[in-house]
Length: 182
Image 1: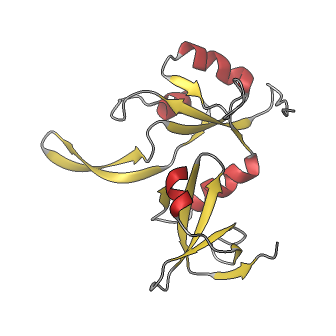
Image 2 (image 1 turned 90 degrees about the vertical axis):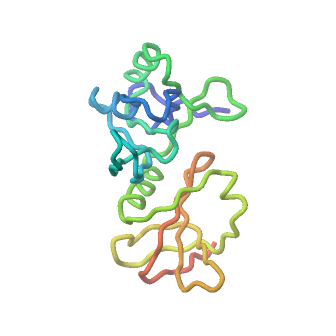
Image 3 (image 1 turned 120 degrees about the horizontal axis):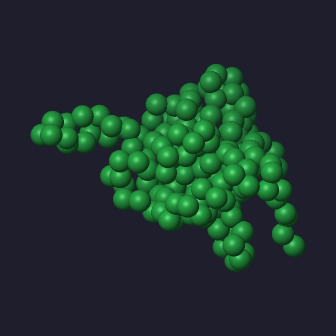
């Protein structure tokens, strides 16, 4: 049984941009110009332009972006743009991946709260040994929940926040943590 999502309710849709990574107008810029709230994980890179190196913010995963809009408004844009597609759930016919608003807000806040987020694909995440579920108490990350990742020999603790079936981010935590009892 599938949960029907109303076409007139704003949701976070996972989208795929099929343009080349060095395209001048990637989908996240195109959708932003249309007034659609868009999020794509970004990082700074040094890029050679006209013989000089410049800092440029680029997408971590060039073909992954999230749009917060109604399906009613997104459908015509996706139909008109051959390089833009919905990401679909595995095993479901033409059912786009919708990220719950709370999960997306937690993910965005985590990425924006740190200068050095580390992103993981699903394959990489399955190879990492994750600890208990924790909650950060206080500080800019206060209230965030996720899995604890600690590296042997390091005093640093990392919080892993995952968007199921898509991507995960780890952020260094320096504040107090609380173990969650399941």
